Image (cartoon, rainbow, N blue to C red; front, side, top):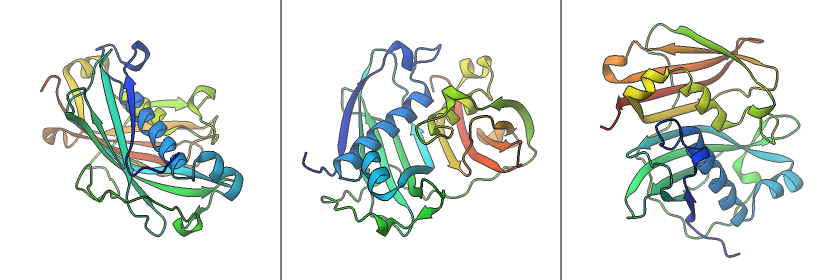
Length: 253
Protein backbone atom coordinates (compact mmCIF):
# COMPACT_ATOMS: atom_id res chain seq x y z
CA UNK A 1 0.00 0.00 0.00
CA UNK A 2 1.30 3.43 -0.93
CA UNK A 3 2.15 5.66 2.02
CA UNK A 4 -0.31 8.53 2.45
CA UNK A 5 0.12 11.96 4.05
CA UNK A 6 -3.32 11.93 5.69
CA UNK A 7 -4.92 8.67 6.78
CA UNK A 8 -8.73 8.49 6.90
CA UNK A 9 -11.17 5.98 8.36
CA UNK A 10 -14.96 6.01 8.57
CA UNK A 11 -16.76 4.87 11.70
CA UNK A 12 -20.43 4.29 12.37
CA UNK A 13 -21.19 4.99 16.01
CA UNK A 14 -22.75 1.85 17.43
CA UNK A 15 -24.78 1.26 20.58
CA UNK A 16 -21.66 0.04 22.40
CA UNK A 17 -19.86 3.31 21.60
CA UNK A 18 -22.22 5.72 23.37
CA UNK A 19 -23.12 6.64 26.94
CA UNK A 20 -26.57 6.95 28.50
CA UNK A 21 -27.17 10.22 26.60
CA UNK A 22 -26.63 8.31 23.32
CA UNK A 23 -23.60 10.44 22.50
CA UNK A 24 -20.12 9.13 21.73
CA UNK A 25 -18.14 8.24 24.85
CA UNK A 26 -14.84 10.06 25.14
CA UNK A 27 -13.04 6.79 25.77
CA UNK A 28 -14.40 5.44 22.48
CA UNK A 29 -13.15 8.55 20.67
CA UNK A 30 -9.70 8.00 22.19
CA UNK A 31 -9.94 4.40 20.98
CA UNK A 32 -10.64 5.65 17.46
CA UNK A 33 -7.56 7.90 17.67
CA UNK A 34 -5.42 4.99 18.85
CA UNK A 35 -6.68 2.70 16.09
CA UNK A 36 -6.21 5.16 13.24
CA UNK A 37 -2.77 6.26 14.51
CA UNK A 38 -1.76 2.59 14.56
CA UNK A 39 -3.13 2.08 11.04
CA UNK A 40 -1.25 5.11 9.73
CA UNK A 41 2.16 4.20 11.18
CA UNK A 42 1.61 0.74 9.70
CA UNK A 43 0.92 2.43 6.34
CA UNK A 44 4.19 4.36 6.81
CA UNK A 45 6.11 1.11 7.33
CA UNK A 46 6.73 1.37 11.07
CA UNK A 47 3.61 -0.15 12.58
CA UNK A 48 3.27 -1.88 15.94
CA UNK A 49 4.45 -5.31 14.74
CA UNK A 50 7.44 -3.92 12.85
CA UNK A 51 8.47 -1.75 15.77
CA UNK A 52 8.28 -4.67 18.19
CA UNK A 53 9.89 -7.36 16.02
CA UNK A 54 12.67 -5.32 14.39
CA UNK A 55 13.45 -2.76 17.11
CA UNK A 56 12.07 -4.23 20.33
CA UNK A 57 10.12 -1.04 20.96
CA UNK A 58 6.56 0.19 21.26
CA UNK A 59 4.62 3.39 20.61
CA UNK A 60 3.54 5.21 23.78
CA UNK A 61 1.11 8.13 23.96
CA UNK A 62 2.47 10.87 26.25
CA UNK A 63 0.20 13.88 25.81
CA UNK A 64 -3.06 14.68 24.06
CA UNK A 65 -5.50 17.58 23.86
CA UNK A 66 -8.96 17.16 22.39
CA UNK A 67 -11.46 19.90 21.55
CA UNK A 68 -15.08 18.82 21.17
CA UNK A 69 -17.01 21.14 18.86
CA UNK A 70 -19.97 18.78 18.63
CA UNK A 71 -20.25 15.32 20.10
CA UNK A 72 -21.60 12.83 17.51
CA UNK A 73 -24.51 10.56 18.38
CA UNK A 74 -25.57 6.93 18.00
CA UNK A 75 -25.91 5.70 14.38
CA UNK A 76 -24.06 8.74 13.04
CA UNK A 77 -21.30 8.15 10.50
CA UNK A 78 -18.09 10.08 11.03
CA UNK A 79 -14.68 10.26 9.36
CA UNK A 80 -11.50 10.42 11.45
CA UNK A 81 -8.38 11.83 9.81
CA UNK A 82 -4.82 11.87 11.13
CA UNK A 83 -1.42 13.13 10.02
CA UNK A 84 2.05 13.39 11.60
CA UNK A 85 4.33 16.35 12.14
CA UNK A 86 8.09 16.34 11.61
CA UNK A 87 9.66 14.24 14.41
CA UNK A 88 11.56 15.99 17.20
CA UNK A 89 14.49 14.55 19.14
CA UNK A 90 12.31 12.25 21.24
CA UNK A 91 8.74 13.12 20.31
CA UNK A 92 6.43 12.31 17.44
CA UNK A 93 3.52 14.73 17.14
CA UNK A 94 0.30 13.59 15.50
CA UNK A 95 -2.91 15.51 14.76
CA UNK A 96 -6.50 14.35 14.35
CA UNK A 97 -9.77 15.78 13.13
CA UNK A 98 -13.24 14.25 13.06
CA UNK A 99 -15.74 15.22 10.37
CA UNK A 100 -19.45 14.56 10.02
CA UNK A 101 -21.19 13.56 6.79
CA UNK A 102 -21.43 17.20 5.76
CA UNK A 103 -17.64 17.59 6.02
CA UNK A 104 -17.99 19.76 9.12
CA UNK A 105 -15.12 19.41 11.59
CA UNK A 106 -16.67 18.39 14.90
CA UNK A 107 -13.56 17.33 16.88
CA UNK A 108 -9.94 18.50 16.81
CA UNK A 109 -6.98 16.90 18.60
CA UNK A 110 -3.20 17.08 18.88
CA UNK A 111 -0.99 14.48 20.50
CA UNK A 112 2.60 13.60 21.37
CA UNK A 113 3.99 10.05 21.15
CA UNK A 114 7.35 8.46 21.97
CA UNK A 115 9.01 5.12 21.31
CA UNK A 116 9.95 2.99 24.31
CA UNK A 117 12.19 -0.06 24.70
CA UNK A 118 9.88 -2.93 25.62
CA UNK A 119 12.33 -4.61 28.02
CA UNK A 120 14.02 -1.62 29.70
CA UNK A 121 11.07 0.82 29.42
CA UNK A 122 13.61 3.48 28.41
CA UNK A 123 12.63 6.11 25.83
CA UNK A 124 14.56 6.06 22.58
CA UNK A 125 15.42 8.88 20.17
CA UNK A 126 13.19 9.32 17.14
CA UNK A 127 16.15 8.91 14.78
CA UNK A 128 16.33 5.21 15.72
CA UNK A 129 13.43 4.58 13.35
CA UNK A 130 14.06 6.59 10.19
CA UNK A 131 10.54 6.88 8.77
CA UNK A 132 10.28 7.79 5.09
CA UNK A 133 7.37 10.21 5.14
CA UNK A 134 5.32 11.26 2.10
CA UNK A 135 4.79 15.05 1.73
CA UNK A 136 3.85 16.26 5.21
CA UNK A 137 0.87 18.40 6.19
CA UNK A 138 2.12 21.32 8.27
CA UNK A 139 -1.33 22.52 9.31
CA UNK A 140 -2.19 21.82 12.95
CA UNK A 141 -5.57 20.60 14.16
CA UNK A 142 -5.21 22.85 17.22
CA UNK A 143 -2.73 25.73 17.39
CA UNK A 144 -1.27 25.09 20.83
CA UNK A 145 1.73 23.74 22.68
CA UNK A 146 1.21 20.67 24.82
CA UNK A 147 2.89 21.30 28.15
CA UNK A 148 2.85 20.08 31.71
CA UNK A 149 -0.39 20.31 33.65
CA UNK A 150 -0.71 21.21 37.33
CA UNK A 151 -3.42 21.66 39.92
CA UNK A 152 -4.98 25.07 40.47
CA UNK A 153 -5.44 24.68 44.23
CA UNK A 154 -6.62 22.10 46.75
CA UNK A 155 -6.98 18.46 45.70
CA UNK A 156 -9.75 16.25 47.08
CA UNK A 157 -9.89 12.45 46.93
CA UNK A 158 -12.60 11.11 44.63
CA UNK A 159 -12.17 7.32 44.57
CA UNK A 160 -9.72 4.42 44.22
CA UNK A 161 -9.46 1.94 41.37
CA UNK A 162 -7.59 -1.38 41.20
CA UNK A 163 -6.27 -2.03 37.69
CA UNK A 164 -7.49 -5.37 36.39
CA UNK A 165 -7.49 -7.60 33.31
CA UNK A 166 -10.03 -5.56 31.33
CA UNK A 167 -8.04 -2.35 31.79
CA UNK A 168 -4.70 -3.32 30.21
CA UNK A 169 -3.62 -3.53 26.58
CA UNK A 170 -1.07 -5.58 24.62
CA UNK A 171 1.75 -3.56 26.23
CA UNK A 172 0.65 -4.96 29.60
CA UNK A 173 -0.23 -1.57 31.09
CA UNK A 174 -3.33 0.57 31.53
CA UNK A 175 -4.60 1.56 28.08
CA UNK A 176 -4.76 5.29 27.33
CA UNK A 177 -8.49 5.18 26.53
CA UNK A 178 -9.25 3.54 29.89
CA UNK A 179 -7.84 6.57 31.68
CA UNK A 180 -10.62 8.59 30.07
CA UNK A 181 -13.35 6.36 31.51
CA UNK A 182 -11.73 6.70 34.93
CA UNK A 183 -11.55 10.49 34.57
CA UNK A 184 -15.21 10.61 33.56
CA UNK A 185 -16.05 8.52 36.63
CA UNK A 186 -14.79 11.43 38.75
CA UNK A 187 -18.08 13.13 37.86
CA UNK A 188 -21.55 12.04 38.97
CA UNK A 189 -24.30 10.98 36.59
CA UNK A 190 -26.04 14.24 37.48
CA UNK A 191 -22.91 16.16 36.45
CA UNK A 192 -22.94 14.40 33.09
CA UNK A 193 -26.61 15.21 32.58
CA UNK A 194 -25.99 18.90 33.19
CA UNK A 195 -22.55 19.39 31.62
CA UNK A 196 -20.44 18.02 28.78
CA UNK A 197 -16.71 18.06 28.07
CA UNK A 198 -15.61 20.83 25.71
CA UNK A 199 -11.84 20.32 25.98
CA UNK A 200 -9.79 17.61 27.66
CA UNK A 201 -6.01 17.49 27.96
CA UNK A 202 -4.12 14.54 29.43
CA UNK A 203 -0.47 14.00 30.38
CA UNK A 204 0.40 10.30 30.74
CA UNK A 205 3.27 10.35 33.25
CA UNK A 206 3.92 6.83 34.54
CA UNK A 207 2.46 3.51 33.48
CA UNK A 208 -0.06 1.64 35.64
CA UNK A 209 0.08 -2.14 35.78
CA UNK A 210 -2.40 -4.88 36.71
CA UNK A 211 -2.86 -4.98 40.47
CA UNK A 212 -1.88 -1.33 40.97
CA UNK A 213 -4.31 0.82 42.93
CA UNK A 214 -4.82 4.30 41.51
CA UNK A 215 -6.14 7.07 43.78
CA UNK A 216 -8.02 9.75 41.87
CA UNK A 217 -7.92 13.38 43.01
CA UNK A 218 -9.95 16.33 41.76
CA UNK A 219 -9.41 20.08 42.04
CA UNK A 220 -12.48 22.26 41.40
CA UNK A 221 -10.99 25.57 42.57
CA UNK A 222 -11.07 26.92 38.97
CA UNK A 223 -14.67 25.88 38.38
CA UNK A 224 -15.68 29.52 37.83
CA UNK A 225 -13.57 29.29 34.66
CA UNK A 226 -15.20 25.94 33.80
CA UNK A 227 -11.89 24.15 34.43
CA UNK A 228 -11.39 21.01 36.52
CA UNK A 229 -8.07 19.34 37.24
CA UNK A 230 -7.88 15.57 37.84
CA UNK A 231 -4.83 13.41 38.55
CA UNK A 232 -4.15 9.82 39.47
CA UNK A 233 -1.56 8.62 42.02
CA UNK A 234 -0.24 5.06 42.27
CA UNK A 235 -0.88 4.05 45.88
CA UNK A 236 2.10 1.65 45.84
CA UNK A 237 4.87 4.17 45.17
CA UNK A 238 3.02 7.51 45.35
CA UNK A 239 4.01 8.33 41.77
CA UNK A 240 1.74 10.40 39.55
CA UNK A 241 0.26 8.17 36.83
CA UNK A 242 -1.50 10.92 34.88
CA UNK A 243 -2.58 14.55 35.02
CA UNK A 244 -5.57 15.98 33.21
CA UNK A 245 -7.46 19.20 32.73
CA UNK A 246 -11.10 19.23 31.69
CA UNK A 247 -13.05 22.22 30.40
CA UNK A 248 -16.79 21.78 30.76
CA UNK A 249 -19.84 23.60 29.43
CA UNK A 250 -23.59 23.36 29.83
CA UNK A 251 -24.90 20.37 27.89
CA UNK A 252 -26.23 21.45 24.52
CA UNK A 253 -24.25 24.70 24.48
